[in-house]
Length: 436
Image (cartoon, rainbow, N blue to C red; front, side, top):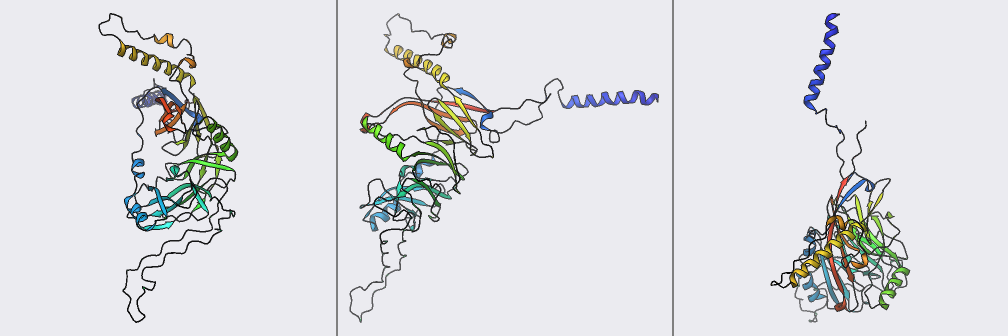
């Protein structure tokens, strides 16, 4: 009994000593690992604003995809005299080329699509004769090169919107050597190399009276609409990095017409505004916000979230999940304060550049920081305070935003872009406090 009486306290002290060697018992222990931003809901993200940072480095592969493919151009020059190649779009894996073109009889701003190999061989015609591709600058390959997305609607002058052509499709070009060469019946015709027949345009593709988003496979097959909302105009869309979804902007046909008329009365180019939505390949669609924006949506690198901008506010949306959330990040105060500092810095640089080196006048001293933060500056007195016009999500925790004054005129020489400045948000995950 006496041995047992002293043994248990000694064993308990020994256990505490061992535990103390493994962990610092005087520091708070958080056994839960810091969650990744992918797994964190949009409403549970923290941010830190950093003003006037260097511009982000964007994807250099995009520039190479815009280069005109010489082999495809040669095919048009040699055998497609009634058609004009407008641009080519190379898939990220460099295995397929999308040709954007129009016939000389087509209406302005209506285009057609074909799929080519990099060496200039026509694989398949993508669009039917009743379809007109619109907004050719927005046509985009998925990052995995498995799908192509574009916007199309029924071609002008078509009455039937079922996808069936009202005119007979053009007859295929006869194979080389199949026609009579004009020699005598007894003469043996000179054999010529056989050539593959020109592919026919597809038929039976559903089309609509307003612009809808279509996708197809890498070889040009399986063309189908992923949006089917008559009356909506989808004018911008971008693939998620995992190639499973599209973030898009859409507006009603009535709103589009109103924006066009309003811009025209001012002599400006119409910059469309739309409501953001996320669209899956199977056609399932979710509207993210009821507000209009002209800023193009961007994806987080992990495809879990979408970012949009509305004036001086950024909004983050969960792209997946059973209970997706959204979070608003108001940046008006931060932008006002940083714009005041930027304007003062520009003023000091201008005064220093224009100062007489022989003058004894001292350079203006910076305003103390505490005075700058005592009250918010008046936005009417700040030339560099402008709305957010562009976003770039370059890393999981880095979301860049560009502010600028932009005015697009019909006379391009009168267009203005000034005070373009890049800022960024450093995102972190909120860590739940340890249970006490």
